[in-house]
Length: 628
Image 1: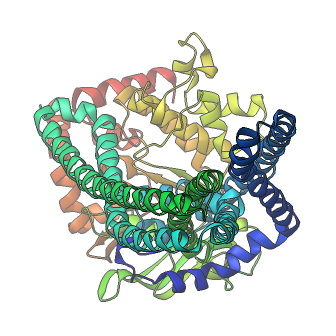
Image 2: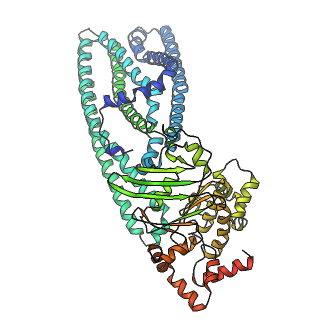
Image 3: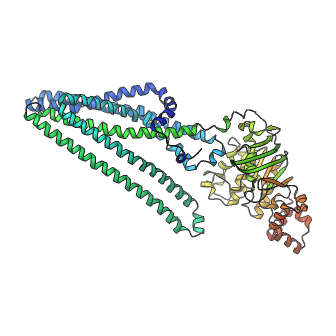
């Protein structure tokens, strides 16, 4: 999905037309509620006119005639009208405002649930901040359509119409002057809003950029301090704050100009009404009560006009937000792909047949990929950065579909297999471990929330999570912080491995799964991984080539092609690209082994993942001592 800034700008009518089905879906089930709200609003507005309407009676009858008995009746009537107005206002808030908030919450859940079902390619082309805005901000305007916003708009029009009729009955000339001035001011107001709206939209973008950069800076504080980049981050943040300040200044200039214009208009109208009204009273064509009543009605006419302008803006923004929400909801979920119709119990045989893939047209990433991976085997992918290893894994995980060729799982085209059958058979351990801000137990159980405590503890023992979890005061209930910040890299990786063990997958993906571990921890973890890989189809991405010497098949990937394939021994003897990578990486280790007289048979028995040099010898002694 392209970013909002890249989309062609739609007119308000086009936006309304595009979101009308969505509005109808939200409004029609609540027609009775809205009708009730409209009746309550009508009563509310009529009762609100009781006070200005009674002002004429107060002056011309009670005060002029000194009729205190009528004063009591008038007071009771106004109090009763006020009570009815307050009661209808309360009922409107209870009925419509709360329902509007429920709709907002419902729509947020719907958008979030839909976004989680979309393909990885959607996330590749969307910014996280934009998606958060879709979920949290764009749906917020719905409350102005379902709640009191739309009815307030209609009520404002209704109130202005009633007041205008009453004012025309009191004095035609003054009403023409007042309405003419308000119409002129409304035109000016709309033009001012056209200037202000882009400023506020720009402020939203600036705020998002500042917040995003500030979040990154705070999240990467160790990197910032490690490179002594505090002043640079301060400068970047300062530039953003200055842009925000400039935007606020523009908005203040525009709003103060509006305030200046409104003060002039209202002052002109007030002077005109005072002048004309005084002359009408002197001429005997008006009473003082009628002038006072008219003046109060003026306020009730101006307020709805300003209110309608503001609410009109809010409803316009709500329609625009719904339009952006609709764009997301129209994205096809992965599990609704019409091609994915085949249910499958996964055993784990994977075959790539002449697979080509590119993220962008004309820029191939993979070309002519062919290989087979059987259950119970380990397939390792090696090669330089950017060679296409991660893309192959993405195809294995069904994150993408090949542009040409096929990926077969148990003889069935993976692009036709239902994801709710395939994805539960996957287990993933990534180099950059992602943990949630929760307890150790919750993060391990993430792959299988229904797992028993015994199963969770079994997985933790295999991954040696118990070795460090037991040292915390709260044991497995220890809160590890955002992204597991309270743990070391190795501890986070062990939790990730325990999570994969608990999932009991048929297909296992390991992306540098032991990269964050020291040699001793790695020796332990390799045993856990050996247990985990047993009987499963395993794919390993490795940069430390010592970790994949026991792989059944090693695929050397360069520039999107498999240039070599075989076992460690056969590829080493081939003296090709793998030999070049291996000897370059392990030259120091080889020289050390020759100089110290450690025989090659011992090296071959060394478990995958043991580093060279003194650490390697210590780890080998450890394994021998434990009988591994």
